[in-house]
Image (tube, rainbow, N blue to C red; front, side, top):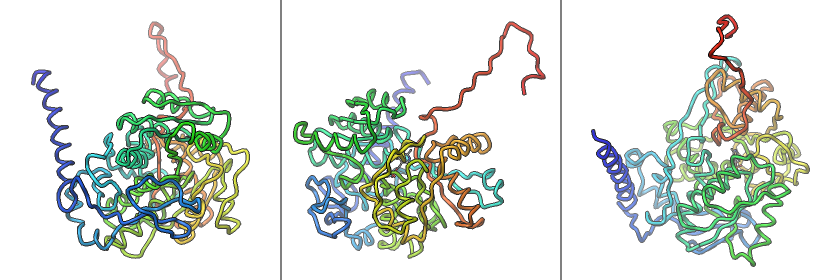
Length: 437
Ligand SMILES: *Cc1c(COP(=O)(O)O)cnc(C)c1O
């Protein structure tokens, strides 16, 4: 095929795919004008009700708001068979999502992420190999894309023109990309030791970004303080209702990939906890629409021992987690000293019969390096923390050797610093082959 034709053909394929997606969003009872199945929002602590379709931050009680749906309606409208015929992306769950029209969707190609077994890791412990849900395949290289695709789509639908956010890196990168795609202005504040690649990708994707001499909470305080003067919308973790709905799709997707059988245990690297809370919500909604029964996986919140407020609260039997002082870990995505959704994380872990566990940076990096070399999957440090925690939990008898465990790798390992590899060869000198070992 001549070059022009190749381009044309690929263009047509993309156009056809978009049309298919749009038509799918428009069919059945979902039209460009709605209605979909959102009924209202609800305070996660007091249960107080809030109107949908207007801009919300936290509830009056200062707690996260959760989106509620007419689940009986969804039960009548959605079948597993209909779902199976849809494109393999996160928008296929539209009956359980807050976006009301195809036009407001801001998409950069949020693919379904694969499940990848780690047989060598399993063999090392004579255990059923754990399976990694590899979220590093998503746009901007992390699962923050799920939350931000949803939150930015909703912001666009609600007419928000300027957004600000504190970030440890990946959330800011996803915010920058989706805001660029949506034509929304983005202001991002990150700790000054955020991985260099994150700060640069944020800047490159059109956001204004500052390095702040503090931690993520200090960056969040700047976002809060600037609200009046800058007239921006605060998109901090759980301070608006829709990121959790995007992250929820991890749980929906996992259930379908496992043919509606729950795994025994899910290990989740927990920072703000959006994904853990979101998956827990997803499972409840799937049960309410009749797609799964009452069985649930044990949810395990994994943190780094240099920043483990949830683990400390779990061990003390508390419902809220005190702020962690002097937080430090190589796993930047889970360096969150204080989480506004702490009680939602701890409630979910408790209800699930799970636990919270911390692993130190040495174990995280050792696990990352070993698994990359033996199983061929380069995890991010946060993902490697779940693998290290799986090993410790196995050793301590917190889980069984036959348990089917899912580990969440939340970003591509390529975004993080790697050990040097600097062996050289001089092509003009004779090569001593027996030294190439
Ligand atoms: C944000 C992030 C996490 C933590 O996710 P939460 O759902 O906010 O707890 C874990 N790993 C990586 C790579 C992240 O970017």
